Length: 323
Ligand code: UDP
Ligand code: MG
View 1 (cartoon, protein in one colour):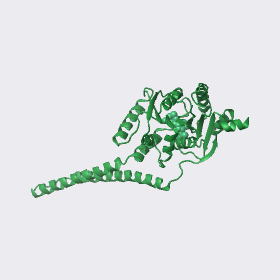
View 2: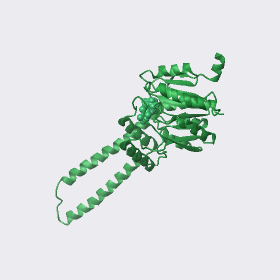
View 3: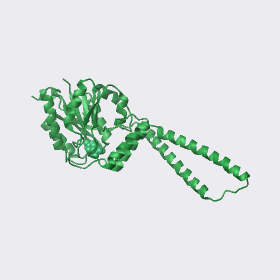
View 4: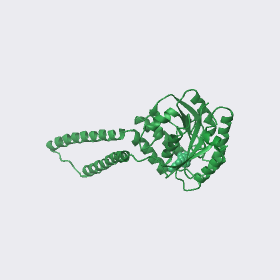
């Protein structure tokens, strides 16, 4: 029997947390009673610097039952960092950890399937959405385009997989060796390797509360994914620059030729257009390069990716001592 931890990042989730905790508790106690996982298994909520009562609810859950543990981050660090904080903290207590969202959008009833795959010998099990029927047209197509784009940039990313996944202890230990500050977990984890498995699940509507990923944040998360995993955009710019240079040489030859043949070149339109086009392209190129330099700047500082203010975890030993 193995010890499994669920890791759930929470940011302003007071509206859903009690209900999520109830449903998850039901699933976990069933698994423990069925002898599938040990009684040392836990559900670890990571409070990502919430402004509402999320942490108080987590503390209360921990008081009520030792099944619930909690990590309080000192500051809001974003979903990916909160997830990382949770995973890297619980890895010393468990044989495998499953990450999921607090809002019950990921079907929690498939947790057992993840554990089955783990017992079959998989170190990483990806939750993959069985369909995108429930998504809006915009979200569906933009996701498709994004996955295509990522693949064309040479990034190994699993389509229709968010952050619902199981990782074994040794996979987590390997993850801890990736020191990057610009974090895009779903792009790094395929680099770890090991035996992988897949579990299909339905993604539901958010049960209560609002999404913490509005369009603007989603776009910046998407760009983060590309720039932290691929340098192909910079290479594309180099190729584009080369292409434009070759065209300008061809143009030079052409205009010199017609000049000596005696016909004049009319109009300033060509000149104005080319100035604008080249100017725009140059700015774009500088912007892309700046984006990468910004990344280097952040990485070179090597700031901590998260700071834990408190870790509430009632271990089996604590329970025995208390009795
Ligand atoms: N989240 C977080 N920190 C943040 C933003 C979000 O820990 O700064 C958590 C949030 O509480 C939820 C998960 O990340 O458990 C996914 O967020 P959300 O459900 O809002 O995103 P969506 O499902 O709409 O993409
Ligand atoms: Mg959600």
